[in-house]
Image 1 (cartoon, rainbow, N blue to C red):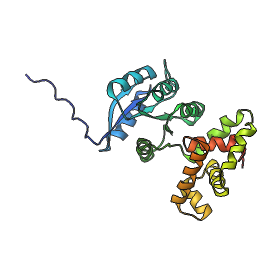
Image 2: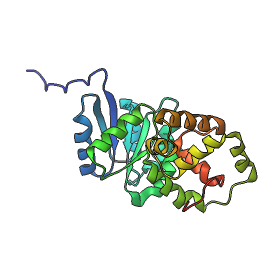
Image 3: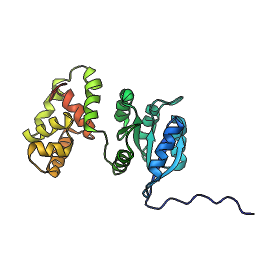
Image 4: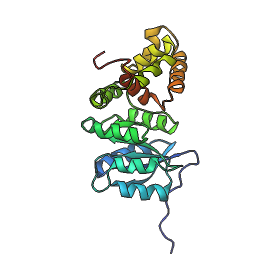
Length: 232
């Protein structure tokens, strides 16, 4: 008598995804979206941060879709733990905008972006693939609102921080300001009458000169340095 037939192994080119959310319906919906794609495979599920950490160690996923507010160890603490690992997976926070203070903290901890839970399937897939490519995925308009709501509550930045702007050319400062105002690269290109590749080049130089990790931190720096202010 033979045992049950094991599930087919994922294709070698498939990216491995772990879903962590305390709501079964959310996990089910995300699994349906992810597993519908030939290049993506859900390798496991977890209902809290502790289970996610254990599942990552056992399953070695490439990406974790991480809920934020969960019983026991929450998604923020789990993100901090996983992002501190030398070869940990990328983390994509899945939350509601009502919880954006937690999403912001998760981004600070090393997450590569966040999605709102009611995002359409197409947006989920675009974001998942972008994060797997190494990009940071937060909608520019949401980045600005996050910064205005949380970063601007901090004390004013020191003059030394503001002086770092002197390292930028006039065009680089202009690009940084437009990024911080919530414009995507294509919109910036239209505004400045240049190609989108040129915008990406300028932004890359801004990140390198200022020692910033990604677009999100560029937005934060633009506000904290006084380059732009809330409502600009």
